[in-house]
Amino acid sequence: MANLTSKELTALEDQISHEETLVKKYEAMACLCNNVSIQQEFNSIADKHRNHYNTLVSFLQ
Image (tube, rainbow, N blue to C red; front, side, top):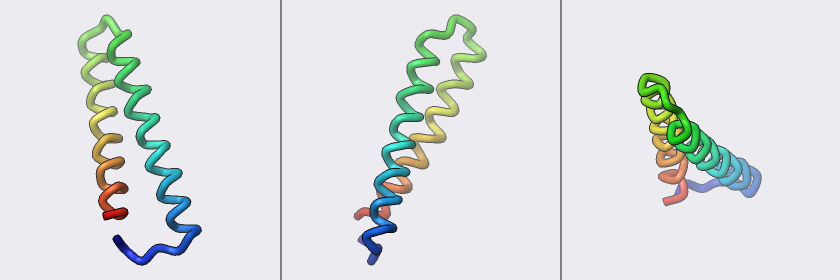
């Protein structure tokens, strides 16, 4: 793990939480959508936020 200050660690944890929430929201919207094109777009956006989440989590290792 990188040497992070308490404030940086708190900000990182908050951002990880926000990214996790965004993944869940976009996945939920994709499930509710009947239009395949829009559903794929929601899944694509969820994937981008999942990548952001994974990148941020890697800073904790």
